[in-house]
Length: 286
Length: 334
Image (tube, rainbow over all chains, first blue to last red; front, top):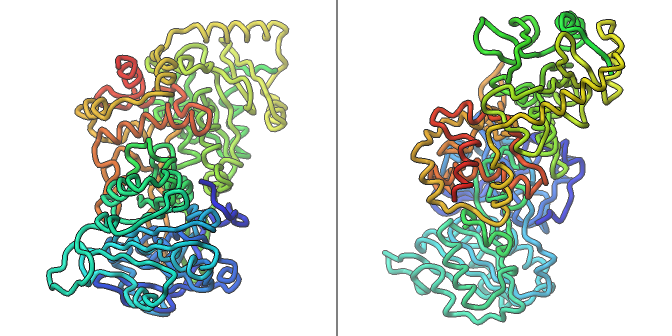
């Protein structure tokens, strides 16, 4: 898929990290935090725009760089929000930083979800775990322009009730009637969960969709895709109405380093969002 | 068209070395013939293929790319003038391939093109295969160039016949070391070209395999079988003139930090592994498939040209006898 927005002077941005400041750090669930970043150069901060589903290359200075999806929607510019799990060298170093500290970012990179194509359609967002991070950008984009879309469904599977990301934000939307929520948790050892216990695919029994007008966006752990897509097939949703955001080791972000290839595609430039019908035949894709 | 006496090659290159840093194949310490800056060893007349192509001049094994200092972050662009003599047609084509790759998606690689825009490439056509593993003609190309070059040298015995195809090339030919061509040189050139095309090379099944791959793909077991021999050393990628996979890492430097880019290879287990531990190419078989299929299946599909130029270096370097020549044979046996 082609990026919808062409950036100005693309070449100048390639391999040019820009300094940014950590504005706020909001705790999420255990081992996860939401970082609000702002580019230090005011002109650059003003010009920064992204598409939902795009990512940045985040540098913790002196430590290294990692690809992180942008969680904030394009409709709320100014601050770049990233929801990060403490997992490797770079993210562990990031968790040691404080508001006011500097990092560097490159990007945004990748193609993003085709928001315009989703307009006038029923939209189903299916997230597993930290897969909600890029989908939150899409979710908020849709909510900020709610009238442009038809039915909106969010399905979100977590490991247990304590692992629900953006819990308070989601709670705050609970009263809205223009979005349907379905939550699942893999297990509930404490016995506090009133909703569905089991993997996210179990939620599909509870919904009716119109396959002709329903478009889906998926993001979650690697194991999730195959099973969810099976369910979507059962619902007769056409393969070209399913968009998957895939994770790969996107080292350079600009299609040069080769780490993120998926068949003939480069996840960082051709993706990370793929129309499922485009990658059906690529064995290693999902 | 002009002539250059072979005895004048070294003085000519030395003259050029005053303006640009000149690299050419040399015998260094009487060991392998390698591509080195002039003066590092002895220029040899031996027909040869350097163990590493001149990609290392444009895409070095390790290079500084960003400097993180208290003043901010800057790109480090190496714009020094260079020249290289003795580039074979296969390696020149590999550069054309990498040029297109490094410029795709309107995102030109700044570090590559800083060097690329300042290099003068002088190719030396092959009169015959220069090693046992050559197979350029099997890939449908010639051991000499038809177009796109600045200067192309042909070995005509005691002298070179030199063609120019650019203003830059014409300027070089103004040097006093070059003399006018003889009326027979055109004929000599045709003969050299015809003869060079007749040589038998090592991968006659190349075109057949590429054609088959257009609609087919070997089963995973095919690659798993080959992987029992592969030791994942990555040598095939490092010597490949079209391989440009890279790693990026940061290191302390002068009170700040330097970001480096180095060669990397898709043959390594950690190459595509994500921080979560998920590895889309965890098996060696899947990595072998990636390495070879993208050259001769995906690249033709993506760019319309083969990612393999038939230099045979992967077959030279592989310690267990894999490499493109063997892969082609195996694919044709399916």
